[in-house]
Image (cartoon, rainbow, N blue to C red; front, side, top):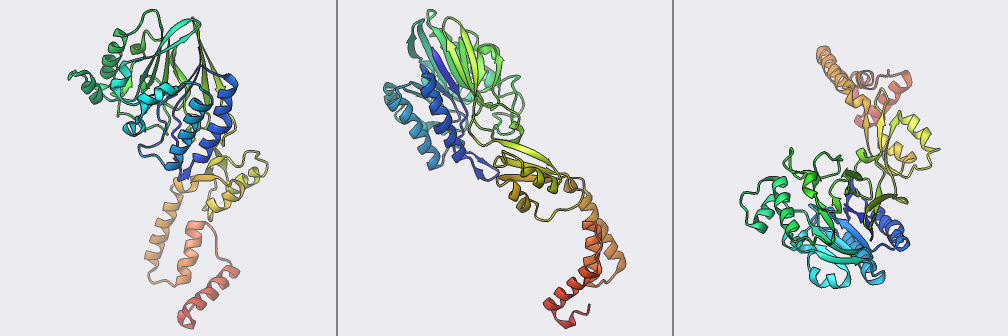
Length: 386
């Protein structure tokens, strides 16, 4: 059986107030669906966090609806979907039993996860278990076991019940959305619980031939046969060096997994240098349209840095200034206040020239002084007295 495993689409995601929906649409329409048409898998898995929030934007719902319709109606390729911690499980579950007859295996409630979908290939039967995101309270309700505390205990209780229903002659696939202990995390992920109480030990997944995971955004393998496909796009700047991919799984009498790199979407990256250096560098940057976060190394203040950087990097989303972080700016303001306090009553030009000196690190020359006095008189009239 050939399987395409993906996860954490987070449709409707916003990065630094910028909607990523157009990039997500490019991923679905220009990369993922052509990949499905080319590889012709027997099953596609989407392991949770379809949407970025429980009440998803209308445009995100439409994109997912178009994707599901094309997969199940036009391509007739089975699609297995679970809900993640970002999804509105009850909203998504409408009509799930009816849709299974059309090849959409959608599970959003824990009680549904205790019954497998049955698949078949040349190597025999396969049981497909779809385990949506759940917390210990949900596990207590589903099992009636009030002793369940923490995610590890909850997963053990549910997986033990699943193992009781396993067909020993069938291969076993599990789809889940959780944090496996020891895995790498990113800034863009919502922590399930503080500390280690949200972690699940990889040993709990013993007995499954392949475990398709969602929740963590970096592609990784906690153990052989257990895999995070990762998010298709970079959803934070600390993911800059991650290689986003889709997992192509071959499950015969053995298991093999290939990472297919995702191409054709706008990258997310950081740049470092002075303002002038970055503007000069942008002219030869073939990927200047990427989403950019800038680290400015200028030793002094820069006037309207975002506006100026946008000339070179039109999709810059944020910046940090070494000068501001170093405390120089605060020290300059403090020194200015102390200097003016000690001087006593001061003319407005004295304040202006002190500001240039203490904060901007420059001196007011004769031309600057004449310009200031001229503007001041135009504003306040001849009675300004400077």
